[in-house]
Length: 615
Ligand code: AGP
Image (cartoon, rainbow, N blue to C red; front, side, top):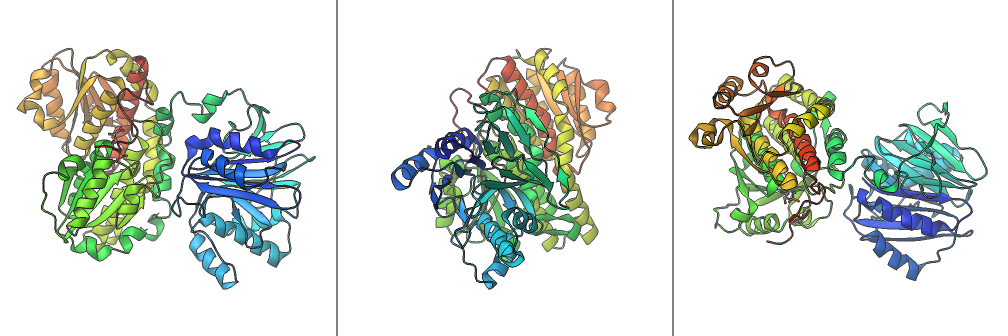
């Protein structure tokens, strides 16, 4: 996710844009830029770093005059964070300047065509391609900016919220939206453009939120004109009177970033497989794998190193890779791996999983593996992070910034990437027939919708949280693919509510932990239909006979567990290997609600940091 801000009106644009960017930094903060039209030319500054770095640079480098301007704070998806990849981007002529939040999937083919037509590119971004496509349409079709944007957007595939202006037409900004948010603040003889209302709520609470495939020409002294990008039909603006305050807006109306990020998971999973999972073509394409396929197919084993929640995602991957791709996998805590003098050869592949891309132990494990000749593949959420730069290849999760210290969307998007890799390798090894493969790909495409359905258990989970919020201890149990989910559920609860919780393989109960069961012990057990269901049912009976309180996560329509458990939370049915992305949802919600009820600081729990960059 990135943050975009624009202004056209009677005030100085610069202070409005800069304050607006600061309010949007939660959306992305690896680089930033601002472009102002001073009546004659565009003054533009952009830089790697935060908005404050941009302010320092702009205020020493350029004129800050002008009442037309756009600004951007970046969360890199294409091209590492650096000055040249930062937005805004000029077109080749220098007449157009654009900011963009989203991903243009077919930018490479468009770029090739534009290069053939004599265009050059300074950055690695999809956005610079888009602004030059718009310019090329203007040049060849002899149309104004609005029409050129519309024609160009009908040629791109992907997601966008863009704002673009032309110095030949400095009384307007053209905006368009598909998949990424874009709001227009309507003031008195002035307009504001932003990813959400936080940059303009102090100036006006009248706003229009563009719908997908809508664009608008925002022109001074005129009413906003909306139109449909695809068929040019006029759309009528639905002007809202916002009642939100600033803090609520930054959290998207949620009480905490963690809850917002739990609810972002359908979008985050979809963004993570966007452009990679082509189910209708029966394809998975991932550059980092495609370019190193032989290494993966000929590897002796895969070693996965990570910490915390990322380590749990690695455990899920172990089940997926061994079950589906028949590749030996070892999962290691990075902090242990780096010091135990492990045996590593050049026939090993090390997969490092890290949301932040800055976890010191994981980074050290990577360096150790590289010294010993292993090929290292990274799964990170932060483009250009230390781990992303240290690995030989990788695949980003496109979860967007994860602000809450407790990892949620990182977990499900990491599993998404690892599932794509395992499925691709299984297909390349000929383990699946074409139809089986297609079945997996099609089911994976249904997961965002099934996560949406799992999120509807929120009210029920909140009621359960109310009952157990004062429990001193909790046990989480799962089998097979859902054993790591039990560990993850326990970690979520302990790290934000400070209740002691432990995750165990369900069958492990009788080897000791069952001694803990009594009427005061809530046991959260994952009992989905797929994977040893009958054995989990007998585990439930063992707990019930000792008066344990049973909260069961089951497949929708389950009747057998419903007879035994004290509480039952249903998630949609899916393939066994895909259940973790669904069963984790009620566990995230349970830990969230219990922590809130206990008055804990959900987004910044005590003693914790979002990224553990020290040993
Ligand atoms: C998970 O909720 C915690 N925030 C923590 O365990 C985290 O997963 C761990 O520190 C690893 O962080 P990384 O994914 O950024 O490497």
